[in-house]
Structures are given as structure tokens and as C-alpha cells.
Length: 390
Image 1: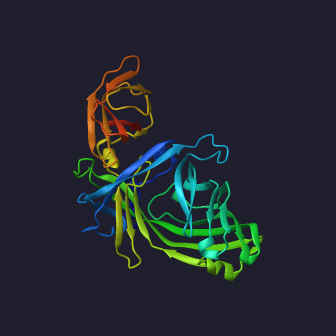
Image 2: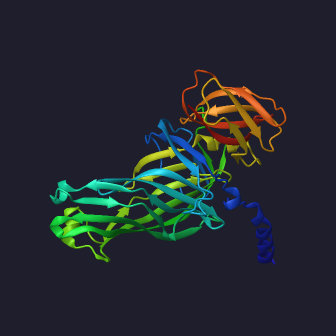
Image 3: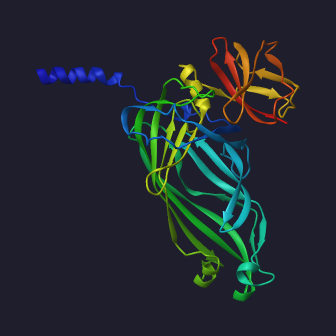
């Protein structure tokens, strides 16, 4: 009888143990997104504790500088028709640079990197091969990765784990007179694999845009480990010869083991909230955080809406009038601009006329990319977007 009663009490208690879960509906990553944040000093920063019911207090982080990733709307892209965004990137093959684009996507199964585009680039390799006309060419190419590696696997909660990988390809054409090669096509294949595990669940506190402690954010902690890259090289449809690879400082089947890291996610925020990267000795190498996520702690029950407004002109010049077309946000009372360092640089009360608010930007506003925040009558965050001041 006592055992039965205890079991019944446990059953009634289970629903009280709310689990932090993130799925596609609570990961509002938009098409076209200025992802910005701060790099923090590692001094005094502790490796996060693992387990359920954790309280992670990183409110003491001190900023060392800002960073940003400008994601561009990729919906309707003919090469990656299911992509959400792309960003312009610089790639390298040994010491040789290439310009390209990196594509990402979000679906019901997760958020992941989908592939890349490389733009035609040619390098002289005379310094390596000795031939006056020897060149390495990377032609225009589209690389849809084979396989898949989710940054976040949907739905994800405590104890979720996934081990995934993909293969990326980089095509090239090689001319080396000493090896009898004249514009011979080749390809570099890189196999990328890793394991991600939700090792913690609880509440997270970070500095807000003003450096003050945020409220408590429901969060999950993911540990990323067993990260490996394996490189293979082919020339003319065959494995590239070892002497040629040696001239470029390459080894067939070379394996690189990358360092582990931790990432925090909170529901209704479209990116990582806090990254803690480890070095090969297991110590902390770098720390990054997003002060914007602190808004969620003061917007309980309100899912942040990203890009739920249209702003024009955009780009805009300092001192000009900004028009904000509100899309289903009738209770907006103010607008703020946050710079890449997470600092509020401008705020103004606004009123609407036929759903459009007009605000004059200060003439001294420094050119650059800003996060524009719309707040409601109770100072809650209603929407966020990006604004380029030229």
C-alpha cells in the first residue's frame, strides 16, 4: 500500500518538472538577420556545470569587443531553394583564398549548414612549383553538402544527443608543368563529423545591453565534442599523387581533431546565447554572448518577433526621417537602436498614423549596422530588426 501511494504521488509530481524544450516554433530565426554580440574576457569565467536544475550565472562577463554576422535572405535562391539565409565568407585552401557564400537552413528537424558557393578565383603557384605559368584555379561552383549536421536538433531538450556529419567538396583546376598537368580538374573532399549532447538544463543569467545582470533565462546547455575533419584529394578522377600533395604541404586522409565547446540556447531566441570555447588542454579559450537575449527575461510569455516590421528607407542616412510600417503591432510606444557592442545609442517615443510611425534619426549617429527594437506600452520588446545607417 505504501509503495502504491508513493508511486501515485510521483505521477502527480511529474508534470511539475517543466522541461526546457526548443523546436522549430520556438526558434524564430528570420530570413535576413544581423547576428551580433560581444566577445568577453575569459578571466574568472568557469566551465559550465552539467545536469538538470542548474543555475548558471555569467552576469559578470566583461566585454572585449563586438562581432557581427550579416545573414542575407536566401529564400527563392535557385541554387539552394530551401535555404533560409546566406552570408559572404572568405575561404582558404592552404594559403590560397577564395570568395564565397555559406548557406543555412531551418526545418522541422533542425537548424543546419546546407552548403556553399565558391566564386571563380585563380592563383599563381610559381613559388611552390617553380613553373612560370603554373596556376591553381577554383571555378564557380555550388556545393550542396552530402549528409547533414544540425547545430540544433528539433525537438531538443535535456539528454538529447545526436552524432552527425557531412561531406563538402571544393573543385579546382591545376596546372603544373613539372608534373605534366595542364588545367587538370581535381576535388578536395572534407568529411566533417561531431557529436552534440544536451548536458544541462536550468536558468542562465548574462549581462544585458547596459552591462547589468539579466533576469533568469530558461536555457539548455549543449556540449559539442568528438569534432573531426578528414581531408582527401583527387586529381583527374584518381587519388592525388603523394609528391604533388607534399609540395602543397598536404597529406592524403589527414585527420584533424578540433577542440570541444559549450553553447547555451534559450527558447524564442534565434541563435546561441552564450558560447564557451575550450582549448586542447580543456581550458577556456574564448567566450561570446548575445546581450539581446536578455530582453527575453523581461518579456515573459511574449515571444520576440524578428522582422515583424518594415523600415524604409533602409539603408538610411543619419538625420533623415525613418518610416516604420508596423505589421500587427498596434501597441508600440517607443523605438530603440542598439549598436554592435550591445549599447543603446538612440531611443524615441513614437505614435502611429495608419500603421506607420515616423522618426527622425539624430544627425550625429555613426554609420553602421544597428538592431532596431520596438517596445510596447509596458516597455516589453515586441519586435527586432536590422537598420543600416550610411
